[in-house]
Image (cartoon, rainbow, N blue to C red):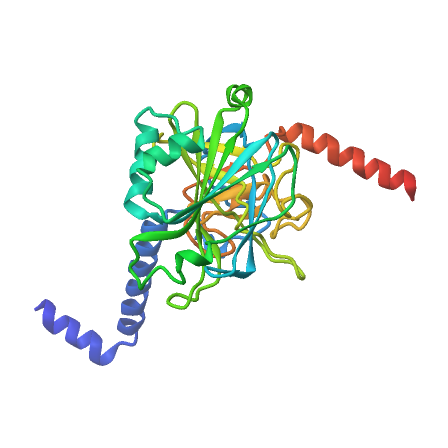
Length: 340
């Protein structure tokens, strides 16, 4: 009987169509409101009402002073012609260059340092390597001496390449250690180990830093990693001088390293935030290591604005409190107004 009644409504009454459409609309609206809640969806809200604020975890950092710095001139580096290295040390130090250093021997030496034998001198480092290298050259570096040193393999050894890939030895390992015993007691970081690729006929890739480690007196090892800055006109970041390190052995902790005492790093100062273009860049996003946001904008991004990678945590380049930074900015604005 009910079926017959519905058929009659379908055939003779236009209200049936209106009722069906209304019922479908009510069901659809109820499903949408039940999914998003009875608040308006985010895409319909005005952008002026409220901005999304993400709680980006703050990575706990420990500030340390790095007495070592090393630059590699990659333009004319080769196995036969040598490599130009420019050290920069806060104290007198020794630069030791190990050509053809065995890969397993270097890994074993670094492991030995972490086991308790501090590799604070070239002699201890050589013993930890078990002398598994093809040539060693040593330079004495005076305090704040920035003159280039050219390290090369003697021609009488007849070494023109280090074989095909995969290789059993690194082309060059540069070791920086403090020369004076008193200086080793003054710094937590006692050695800088830099693994450098040097081009040859078998592998002509340009010279570059492959790995860089800082060894501490307590037996810890920090791996230096470059920060990626936003490129400006004719200016790019220099990955050969990283400004931050992470300590894999300590979960949830990291360390900030000052490579040149008072300097912040190559090209870090004076860069503006890529979002607001007003405040200076002061935040490093992890794990992508892009340095492009200020302290105010970092809380508004869940993804890196440069590579769109998900931001797990961040840390500050400068430890200056935000209140102090605001006071400095206000003083600068007042000085500019007075000049005008």
